[in-house]
Amino acid sequence: MITTLLIIHGLIGVALLGALTHQAVSAMRRPSKRTGSFVDRYTGVNQKTFTATVVALYVLGLILGGVIYPNYRLNVRIPFEEMRLGWAVGLFELKEHFAGIGLGVLPVYAYSWSSQTADRSNERTRRILTILLAAIVWWDFLIGHVLNNLRGLA
Amino acid sequence: MNSPLFIYYPLHGDFTWGTQVLKGVGPPMLWYGFLSDALIAGAVAAVCIPGRLANKWLINLVWVFPIATMAVCIFLLRRLFQ
Image 1 (cartoon, rainbow over the protein chains, first blue to last red):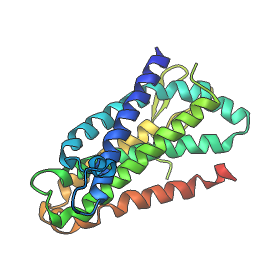
Image 2 (image 1 turned 60 degrees about the vertical axis):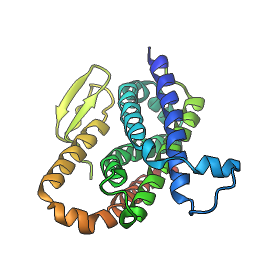
Image 3 (image 1 turned 30 degrees about the horizontal axis):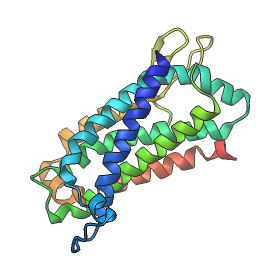
Image 4 (image 1 turned 45 degrees about the vertical axis):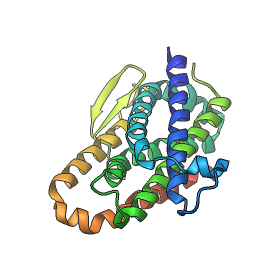
């Protein structure tokens, strides 16, 4: 059951990576003449349409992570401590704290992309928050994979 | 800094309020308590901060808080990487 939840947690992370990376790269893109290239198509997405999906996937991923967390605490972190892998414990601590910070950023992120505020006056804030969320999700995803490779859940 | 609202002990599913760590009930988990603290603080801020102030000033600087918090987390956990 825990393994199934972990796999779903990972798949949600993949989907979240796709959505946030698209949105962040598109937000950083300077307006220019479209050429039809891969980069052009990758960055030329409708940025606002990703917002609701990002919020839903992030919350769902966090909830699943919260359900799996006790199993990690008992069956993974204690062996890490016994093996004196303080850096592995530290990486997961950063993962969990960054995930919580990302949860706090979500309402402001969603507000900045809402139709009432998605104008040029909030463009910098919108871009920074999107890039920040993308960085948090990338970090959490990669750290989760590395630590699961070191020692998986029972 | 270590002030979770409650502590969860996953070995037997026990809870304690506040920061007192019990002995003999297995390893503690503080993360749920920290998230609860943040939820309460955010709700209070959402109610108390005037909308006019938030829309005019805070919206342009709000990104500073999460980045600063992340930097503080890295600083506080640095001993684990030494």
